[in-house]
Length: 356
Image (tube, rainbow, N blue to C red; front, top):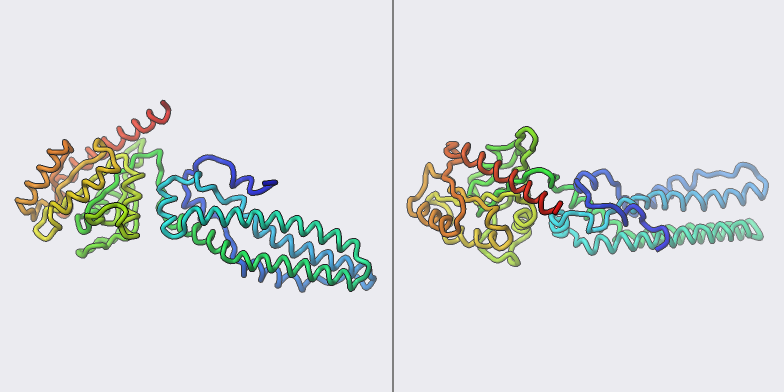
């Protein structure tokens, strides 16, 4: 398609999509129309000769089309879906399916090309006008058609705006740095762990489902900035039955971990170990076993039977298991050292696979 969206059509994977989208302004249809209506009446003829009045009609025409096309320049900055990491595509698509976003972008690119053609055609008609009345009629028709096209694009512009804000609201993930994803059922202590070991400022409460978004904290260790990812709690049900909040956790679990820490809550008030194990089994369907580490949390108030069952499951799977208490700090140092070491090793393995 001639000249359409050159920048949008080219380029590799965007390193930081949330930051990228935050810096792109997508106007509303009303914003474009209002700017035209605000500036349009300010143009006045430079004299009283017929030629001055004819030039005014041409200036009005040019102004309207220039404003609209200038406002549509953002289309050149809209990335194709394949330029976004699947993590961002999946989460943004919970708000706006990425197919709908890209169809809207392509539709507006076609509209922009049509508008450029119309501009050329109407300029030629204006220059050939046989009278001032004819020129005014042509200008009114040209402006009316242009504004009508913008108004009809209201839905497409809003779709792109919604997708933009969906991506811009997500955490920035650096895939060149190690990533520790923390998963488990609601109230297993994920947010408390992330808050204790990293820079993340996450809400911690005594009731389930406190975490509704994916949060990221960091740990600086010299050459690396380890990202620690807090995820919403997920229940013991298949991936395709998850609600919107759980799907955010599922996307982080599928796409982000260099290493994944699965927290068992072994306190008396927790979900049953069988239920927590079902969640772990679901995680194992999408995360390689060698990336998973088990920690039994709340050992300061642990129920012995739950500890025994959780340990048996970890041993059955051949997974490393740690006993910790986020509240008292017991076992955290050893666990964190292991997670950081394993995440750095995993990152190096990812790099070797990519270069190989």
